[in-house]
Image (cartoon, rainbow, N blue to C red):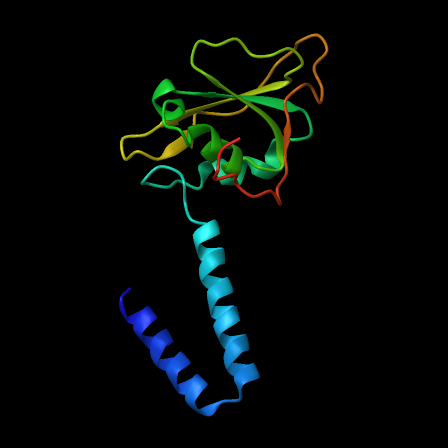
Length: 152
């Protein structure tokens, strides 16, 4: 990991010494943009990762889904953000164990934290027969959205 910045510095030094200023400036801008993009898309979830939640994304459908998560995950300040990111592209409400689902939720997905610390789905998605179920009140988490690292 320490070699990458060193290689970049050597490249920039050689570029600024011999290349036209416009090419050197373009290289520096692109390298900086790449670094910022990597930082903006950095992981915010648990230390161990399981692709189980991300694989469920296309199967969730257009209706509101309540995600029931263990309190240990929701106690982390980024737990809800992590679940929203992994299941993005769907209408999601995230609640803790023992909380009541909001009205208008058609499906329920329970998640847990396994022994390695990865967040995994528990079984299958349960369809609910609730009056008024449908798109519901849960907000749509756009699949092209970005995490709001400053809160909110």
